[in-house]
Image (tube, rainbow, N blue to C red; front, side, top):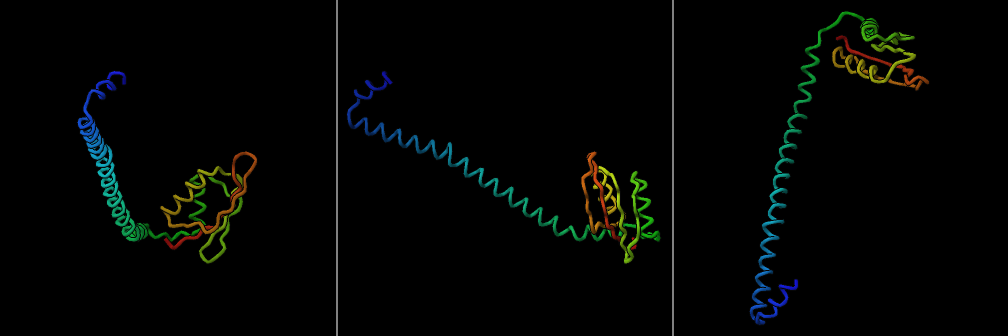
Length: 159
């Protein structure tokens, strides 16, 4: 600053005004090309990415019904009663239900005294994806040993 101030004082008032205008114009150009244009370009790119994502989401949502219908057609029909399919599935997953009984109208209820949450949720998801068996009721109580006591009501189609 000590070098610039004497140089500035040596300039005539007209030169000082012109230099101040030049510095102002340089600041405006720097602000425009260094800040505002890059921000506008980034906003345009973000809007384009958003529009692409929205159209992809709409396409996926429109295909969801067709995918679910194709999955339902792909599942083989089973002549095994729902109770037996659930018993076999629980046995294959390593679960031993305390009670397992049919409530009629295509619904089975079961109670498991102690089960870890993640294997239970995986088993339920597998039954739904593989066999079309859906959970209509899930009630759980926490046991002292980090397991759950679970009551389930499951229903399924003839598949």
